[in-house]
Every structure is written in C-alpha cells, then in structure tokens.
Length: 412
Image (cartoon, rainbow, N blue to C red; front, side, top):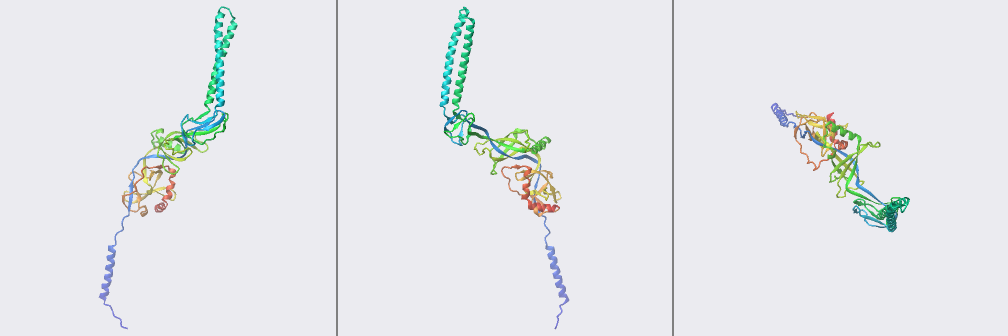
C-alpha cells in the first residue's frame, strides 16, 4: 500500500485557517446585557387610616302596633309590606261597647252637673238666710259641703267621659310612626286584649337606617394611641367618613355618618359597639342585613404607597421588596405594612423618600445584581380606592407565593 504524504505547508495553512476562524467567532460574541427593571419612586404622602368592621343594619324607628282595648277585630285596612303614614288607621276594633260606655259616662256627667246647679242655688239662698239668722250656721255649712261634693262629681264625670272617648278612639288602631308595615299578626274576627298587649303588626322606618358595628377594644386602644402620638390626625369624631360594603361585595352608593361609639366594653366578646347612620332612599338596606363598614378614622401623613406587585413575603411571612440603590445594585428591604389602599400596600417602615422599588422584572434579578432602571408602566388604578385593615394583609401573601419564594431564596 502506498501512503501519500501531505506537504507540511498545507497542514500549517489549514491549522492557521481553523485558528483564525475560532478567534473570529470569539471576537464577534456580544457582551452580556444589563437586565432592565421597572421601578417606582416612592415619596411619603397622606393616606387615610381606614378600619373595616362587620355589622348589621337596624331600622331607624321600630314601633310595635299592639291592642290597647279589648275587642273583636272588624277589618284590616292596610297592605302588608306597604308604606304607611303616622296616624293612618291599620285596624278597626268593634266600637259598640265603647260607644255605650261613652254614652253612659255622658249621662252620669249630666246628672252631676244638674245636681251641682241645685247645690249652687241652695248655697246662695242659705248665705242670705244665715246672715238674717233665718237658718242655722250648721245648715249653711252642710249646704256648702254638699256643693263641693257635687262639683267633685262633675269633675269625675268629665274624667269618665274623657276615658270613654279615649277607649273609643283606641278602637281605631293607627300607625304610631311613618314607615313600612310588616306582617299582620291578627286577622278580622280575632279577639285582642289590652291586658295582654296583643301584638298586631310592626312598623319600621327604613330611611335612614342604623348600622351597628363591632370593634375590638384592642383596635380602639391602638387608634386612640396613634391619635395621641400624632401619627394619625383627625378632624373630630363627627367628621369620620363611613362607606358600606354590601353582602354581594358591592359598595353602597350613599356615604354614612358616625353617631357614637359605646364607652363600655362587652365582657363576653371584648368589643365595643359603634353606630353609624346611612341614608336609604331606595330601601336597599333592610333590617338585619350583614354588612361591612369602612371607617376613615384619620390620616397618616408619612406613609408610603407601594404597588402590590412590588411587595412579596419571605418564608416567615415578612413583607419584603427589592430596591435599586444609588449604585444601580439590587438589595432586599424588609417592610412594615399596615394594610392596603386601592392597589397599593401602605408601608410605614423600611423605605426612605426617593427609594426605587422594583415592580416589574422582579423574577429576572437577584440581590447584588446590577440593573438598568426604567419607569414602570402600571395599569390604571380603579376610580375609587378602598382601604383594608392590616388584618387583611395575609390574603395577599398567597397571591404572590411564586414570586415570594424566588425573592426569599435569593435573599438567603
């Protein structure tokens, strides 16, 4: 077998060509790019301090319609569930016995008045005769006493007539207040008794309505301490704004006003009652409904608002955020949050004015990395921002579970 040798100059040329090609590829590789993140620059601002409390609605006025005389119900003169006016007749009780009682009282009064006329004339006659010693002083005194008894009989007769008229009036069972009448508890033909105060129906005034809220004594104590220390500023107890969230999660259109806060703590529940008053022109609120009220109790003038997507939680539940420092390096900051306001967390500790908080591209960076910052492009906030108390904060932890784990592991 014959082996042909390759000339040395050809091997040297081929090797040089491969080396130059490799060098050319290495020189053409692009340098690593600095990751770009969206940030927001935070500044302290005034944020309302809002407390969300559970409660139930109750009617502004509740009047139980009860029988005030004995008798048979002749008819009902209202439609159940309708609006009635104060003084409107609801039931008619048989008036016949009370008409007879009134007539008897009037007759007794007339007899007493006639007797009084006789006694007045007798006293006048005896007054002249006793001056002439025609009758004894004893007879005159007896006549005067009898005249007084006759006058008392007249007064008693008038009172009996008034009583009979009042009882006759009670046969017309009227509504004591204006409002909405409920279910009728009696029907025509039923016998009602004043001695048992037979319940006939109930009338409730539904505009406005009360909302009775419960607040723990601990939350109330913290609020008072924050106000005294100056962290929260209020304009007075009557100026607090109150909004209502209905059972379906929608916000009630009418704002309310705080009426009072009870000064006694319930020993069984450790809570106090707060009462608010809400207009109810559309009768949307009915007595007994479960609602949640948001009470704006003051203003925190040194809070930071951080978008919720920029705040995560570590494995211990501590709120954290990634900050870009002056050297464009990423660092982790533990935060102190007190709740949410709209789409933002309310942060009271861990941030300084002018800090750049990463809200976009969190999953692309780690603490210590160099980044390039751009202004974050966030979705527009809702028309009305709503605040929730700090107790609602853990609900957001689950929403950021994936991002939280990534940031927590990076921080460790």
